[in-house]
Amino acid sequence: MRKLILALVALFLLIIIGISGTALYEAHRFLNTPPEMPGREVTVIIEPGTTFDAVSRMLAEQNLVTDANYFAMYGKWEKAAGSIQAGEFVMNTSWTPSKVLDTLLRGKPIMYKLALREGLTWWETAAVIENTGYANATEIKDLVHDPELLDKYDIPFDSAEGFLFPDTYLLTRKESQDPRFIVELLLKTFWKNAEKVWPDGKPDAETLKKVVILASVVEKETGVPEERGTIAGVFAKRLERRMPLQADPTIIYGLGTAFDGNITRRHLEDSGNPYNTYRHGGLPPGPICSPGLDALLAAANPEDHDYLYFVSKGDGSHQFSTNLRQHNNAVRKYQLKR
Image (cartoon, rainbow, N blue to C red):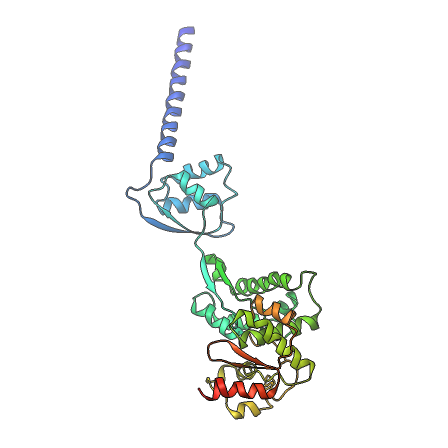
């Protein structure tokens, strides 16, 4: 009887060893054998909040791993189940599970570029976002004028004009399809850069208004970085002396999308345009575009000089003058002869 019991125990142990050996072999083969050779690229989208088991099933369906259950166990063994990234990833069916998992944990998701140059109006910004395929311009318009959003980001105007900070942004697929995320990102970036303009903290509302409005006018008046401080100084001097700014870009902004590319005498004499700085003294009622950091710095710290006028030389730069006689001579030299 004792011999029979020992034989049964030995047989049971052999069965257990056989099963374990098979499992070890299957696990080894799973970890070291790519699903396909040669492989092919597959784009995988991991939505935020997706469970690791669900990700494992999706990877198996796309033949990026050979077994969903094994991959789920592998992730738990590596204590990675709660650490995978959300985003869009390019993988290959020739990869082993370890490379697939490493991509989910540390790989760079596909990023979509949104390039916004300095000097765009809010509707031009909305058009760029729409033309890039990220969001509808109407959705952007609604957000730009959303009172709750304006209050949230301490914007003292009835729109976010001037605060949609120009920069090159990299967005994930989900971010690029969320208009609120995009607008809030631009506003957050404005305040992040504002720390360089006001390192001691946010300015009061009146200072903020003046600087952003002036910076927007400076941004539209010149594309030459080294001139921004000088032009800001011209406008500061004119404001100090209660002279009209006489800035063409403000008139253009007031005309909005109706502007056809030509400023006429009728436009210059139109007092019904609140942005007509030929007819209305002081700064215009609001920003006329989104200024970049250099324009903001120039507006916050305008150069101290005696210039009151400037005229384009035709090459992007300007001739500055201290009096009207000099200015008229410069106009004849650089404008009338052309």
